[in-house]
Image (cartoon, helix red, strand yellow):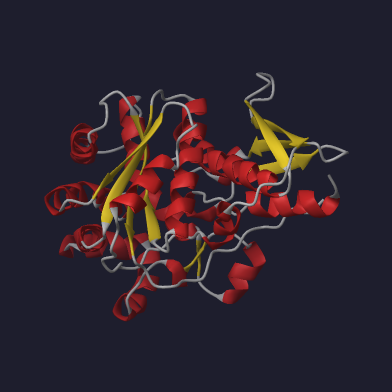
Length: 351
């Protein structure tokens, strides 16, 4: 192992997705580059979604998966030890790099091509073989499953549920505030922070671009909601889901931090395989995280009306996706043929 290889592995690691691209991780490498320690940075994501740091743990799972894939590509086996030290509560994983024969994998290149595509998709021809490839991508990850739905009637039903989160973003001041704090409005902000979401990746139409800057002001949003703003925003999500080629859900047995890390690894594999198929993917994760809060009786800050909306989704989504009611829903997503977009930036880690 040398600096060049370890830096390439780390470069791949930080291409992982995270909520609003907050990048809630820190990576430390041992002196001889044989061990990587992955730490959670709780202050990076204080959003309402990140209850018990579970949103961040999903991201850490994706980081770990990138490290495993990149290590294999460069001739190392990554031995992952999750939460190895109870006294270091922010230490997510210790990853030992053991030399082995290098194995080229297309997934390595897909790490750098993967992106969140929020634009409207076109229908894409997807064969049974392609669907089987995505479904098989999570084999080897314990207690995780993936469901894909392409039947029009079910897609229509699921779309009505997945649009819920976009409505709540514009009806909850705390969620709205966190989102707009992470939007980068110009090149200077993007280059200075190397995190967050450039406004150009939000999937806005030319007309929406004119009014969107006003939406960062809660007073405007609150007034506009009297005229149906939040419902209009939700309708766009509904339409984007309904016109996608397929909808999917990653779920996991258990609901502790290990389960969410494993779910994050599965999310990344699904995303990378989808990328290799030449398709676009948009995660729909806010709703599943709200459902997790509700299951833990931690949605008390929500009004009764909003709790009822989340509870309805909690009850019906497992049925629509044919998952066990006791499983934890990690992330929904939509897949289709999307336009080419620019990836969000990542902070570099160099040793």
